Amino acid sequence: MTDFSIQLYSARNVPPLEANLALVARLGYTQVEPYGGQFGDPAALAAAIKAAGLTAPTAHIGLDMLKDTSRTIDAAGTVGIKTIFCPAIPREDRSQDEGKWRELADTLARLAETYNKAGLGFGWHNHDFEFVPTAGGKLPMNILLDGAPGLEWEVDVAWLVRGGHTPAPWFAQYGKRITGIHVKDIAPEGEALDEDGWADVGYGTLDWPQLFRDIKANTSARYFVMEHDKPSDFERFARRSIETAREWK
Image (cartoon, rainbow, N blue to C red; front, top):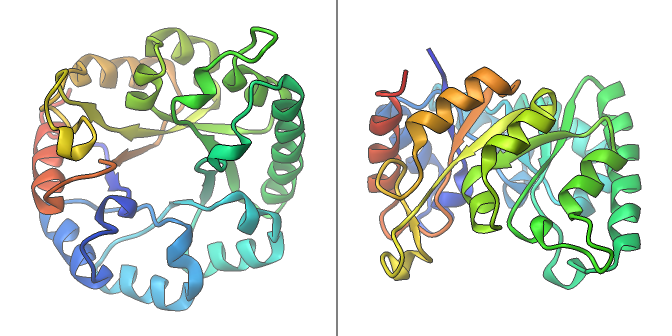
């Protein structure tokens, strides 16, 4: 039986946090994935998650906070985070300069070593920009994973597909490094424009039953996190997505 989590960024436009935690617990989620802006008061975040009967084994924390390793380690301990994922870099830093990506890989490698020594997993969460070739023709995703061998990977499958790639070869190449999955779906072309073209899981174009089988067979994924970047109705997205996932074998 897979425990499904949900990325709380999906509910960022419908506060309060406590109501959203109670909602996802009622729907059958056992875990949540907080994001950087929610770590202003780690003790309050931890208390809210516990009060809802949930846990938060993973989190998204931005690079600036990650570089403050002592603060981040303390926050992770307070909330009960086991694995931290860096979710992105600012748009202005997404370059075709291969050297910039190698510098980032070096930074991530050092951070991974620090967090691993503290007993925490540490990884990267992709979007689509990591699949745009550098001026030298290499993919930033390869540069990051190959240049930071201690780095785990939380694969956002839908962003990978939007980046023009098929997931299976990436599962095969980096499966042992893949510890988390963002479970997300893509609406048919021209639909859900008010939701930036995303769909509730199982209501889009991705073959999630087959993807789930491939992930289980070919990766080390233990975290399965539902996400929708811009749901017009958070409750609808959360409910329909977990109902869909319960049918997967």
